[in-house]
Length: 450
Image 1 (cartoon, rainbow, N blue to C red):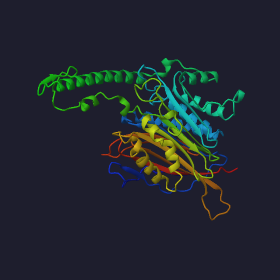
Image 2: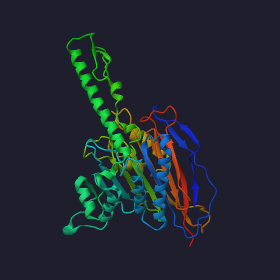
Image 3: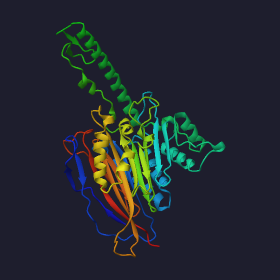
Image 4: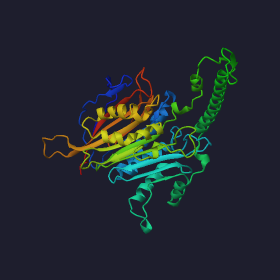
């Protein structure tokens, strides 16, 4: 196994838009290392969300990413399917109280947890997903079970098996298939409950401010020109004819979706046979409307995995994170996978984030476009083409990119002693929602000796 790590060397790239800053990681060729005899190979890349990761919690984010990588690699070394490995990584991420997935997810307007998750198998191209699911500790396990059941073929009387279930129907299907229910009190943590209470207070204050602004506008229209009125929320005088819309004041009460709560989690995996899989899981936006389903459950939006084929020279796996509505309207996972079929993976991902996400005409009305992706692509190659006896290796290129302030990732090969983690941040001066950071590396996986 050969690892080519690229996190230290950074340079600023020119971009097509003056609002976009791109960070390129220069990958250097390492020394060759001998593969351990009999060891199975494979690679995993995980993310703990694109959002904002405070320095005070950096250790916890990195630790959960390490554990997720280790769980996936343990599965791969035991000969498990890529889908089972990626599910194992996601379960570890969902179980962390620091991520917005599974246990500790954001609460909706009613104070309930509703989760989305999906998984895709690059070999069969099958897909499984759940949306607005309550009462199940690990939503990704239900998504994976849907995928597996779908591969068995038609149901009785020729019925087509479901690949995507939501709400109560998803819960009942999970329980009927042996997945245990989880009491709601266990799903919410002290962190998520505290965030819910803060957000509810902010919402109430914001609604009061908006009511005051409407009253001010009516007074302005009733010819109270130049008079000064008092805002009953903040107690400060306001000019009725000053033309202010109060946007800055409302911003004071914005919810915590810009400070760590966009932490959808995900993972991408390639196994020894070159099969890829991808998965994603999320608790959704804070104070979302009950029943809202985000990108984590939707086909082509939350994750994508596709093995090499007649029209796809590379196997690709993608997992996304960020504002679900932005990712849904751009079908970002599928767009990234298609772009990665070109020769230069780094440039392809950069242009996709610029043109298909930040610059997407479907998001033209948005002030800032928030999201992130992890991508993996692989192909078979010979490490020394001139040597006919040389065993082919699996070349794995892995990248992550985000428009949010930060994104936490971890990666590991089956021959590594431990996972490596990194919190990627936008460069100083870059504006979240208008800038892109992109980093990554390359890994060569040699077939094990018999």
